[in-house]
Length: 108
Ligand SMILES: [Zn+2]
Image 1 (cartoon, protein in one colour):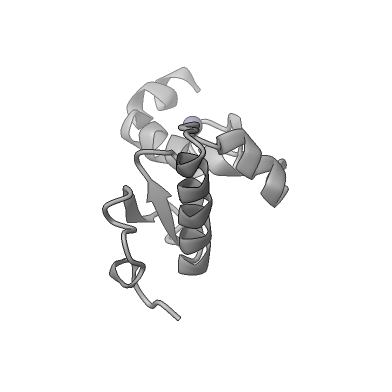
Image 2: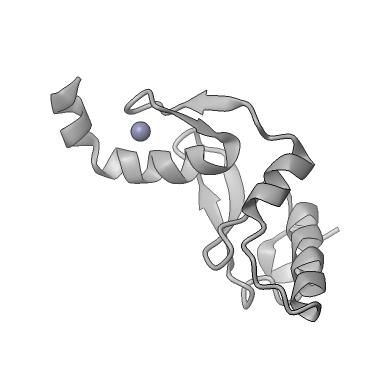
């Protein structure tokens, strides 16, 4: 079992990085495909799928497909502005939202 991102061959090169969300949970995000994985096994799995797609000449982000595949269709409220996002977007949004926090605070 890989224990860190550098143990997954090619993961860093493929754009994966470690990211700690505002709740303190560690996830892996890919800046190139905007994919997100909670375990290294998932990272490896997604990389496998990406290679398959690339082999077919497809360069889609695969976001919607992954959402459906993983059943992540439930919405989660942003801790900062309360807007609802799907599981894939919430962490990314909260990071941005936190940085823009003052504007939201004034609106609310
Ligand atoms: Zn927000």
